[in-house]
Image 1 (cartoon, rainbow, N blue to C red):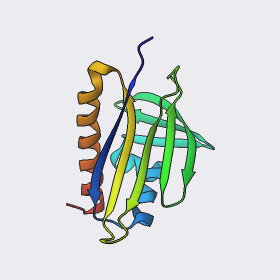
Image 2: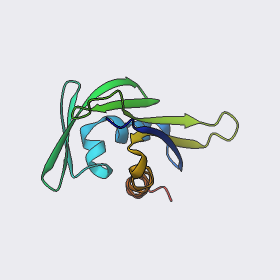
Image 3: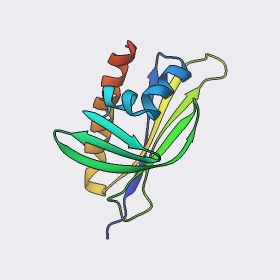
Length: 127
């Protein structure tokens, strides 16, 4: 089995942490930008894209700060995390993404996240 490579991305988002968190942690919020549709039952989330379903477990969350999911199809310790960071001085809000990908898929995964976050910014009215 190939070891996946951890990568991190940062995006500045013009939004309050409380509003942003709703788009990261709720099925209705995630379905606005991350997937075509999202359902949840307890800690199990089902993400739907073009009729294909992927299931993930919500591993950890802290209100207005971060969510961490693990794809159920993964047989390793990888996860994806969306963390909200507020700069102490400027009060700028950033979204930190942590994810894992195969070595030859890291750039593609980064581009996918950039596109997804671009959709999120549109939904939030953040340019």
